[in-house]
Length: 79
Image 1: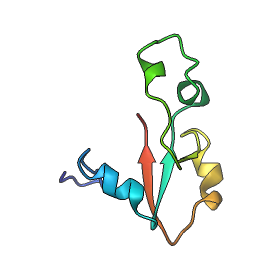
Image 2 (image 1 turned 90 degrees about the horizontal axis):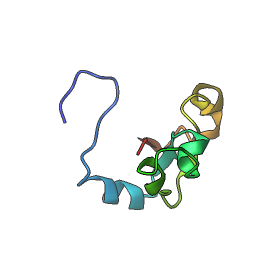
Image 3 (image 1 turned 180 degrees about the vertical axis):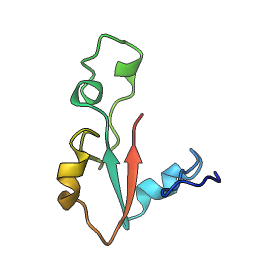
Image 4 (image 1 turned 90 degrees about the vertical axis):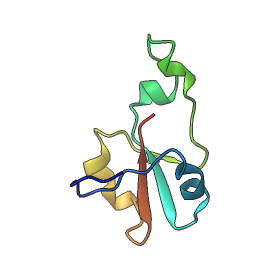
């Protein structure tokens, strides 16, 4: 995907390789209720979890940046 943003979007086809790459840290930024399937929206409860992903809700992310490894690429996931 081409854009003028300071971050890069990846295609769904690139995701499996990123998930297997040890130099990539995966961060699930969904709220706790979505991650744990506790919403009133049955469809949103179906997505489950990404194995090995660190959960840092997007609202907490700025305060939690120190938990991320600066030497690794960060892959944010918001299913």
